[in-house]
Image (cartoon, rainbow, N blue to C red):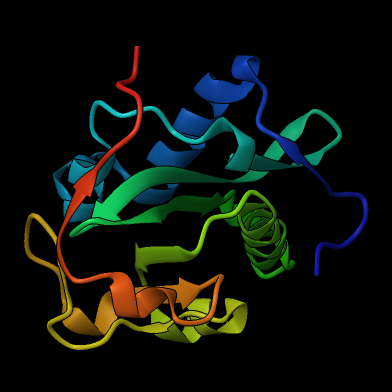
Length: 170
């Protein structure tokens, strides 16, 4: 879990630039070509699920979520989850996920997907999505397409192509 002196808070509007800089540092410009980015493109993130990890005034990590639909089933796309390189292996990413997933469940969301490394995300309850059940609008290694039910049985309703939903970004 998150170690002192780090604190978790909802991302404030004035932190958006710092979060973008952290994502650039963590993932580079190639992130814009990834399939997961296509689902986020031109869409507004869910502000109630965007958390940051702070060490005083220093941004140590962040997580964001985006509304999607898999076929007709509403879901969330987790990502990016980024931790400042000098602060990795301190429990920041896991704490951001734990807090944000709990909040997503409180808000009534049922299913979360992401594209990532199973050994890392399994600690937060993610598993490989059922083979062939969820399609993304671009190439993805099926072993990296992960899901987590926030409501038991939610994955059963999620079949087909995934698309971004929700408000357009301004």
